[in-house]
Image (cartoon, rainbow, N blue to C red):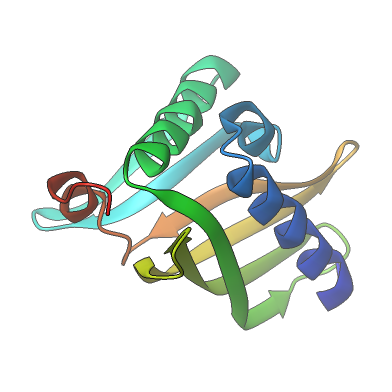
Length: 141
């Protein structure tokens, strides 16, 4: 897996979010996958052994973004560690914006990627900066 493959993957991932299409986002995750959070009480891991709960999570995230005035996301790859043909780690800086150009949120997320027969998929995301609780507190502007 190389830098071009990974950049193209995240461009597709961003476009799925920009359509607020939770199913399209979920299609870019491995069937068995998870997300790690750096919570106040320590690290937490949500592991989805099946597709349905992972897909529900991405639909709910897109609905939250929609309710807060989300218009688009942009990303920068901060770090990239290719690990052979089938694995890579990518550390991204995301900027979520509203239609008026104001910033909804900026945060880093780490992704463990796996190349499958269906293309590159997220195996594990480490969400250590995105603050969904704070986002839920503020009304769309």
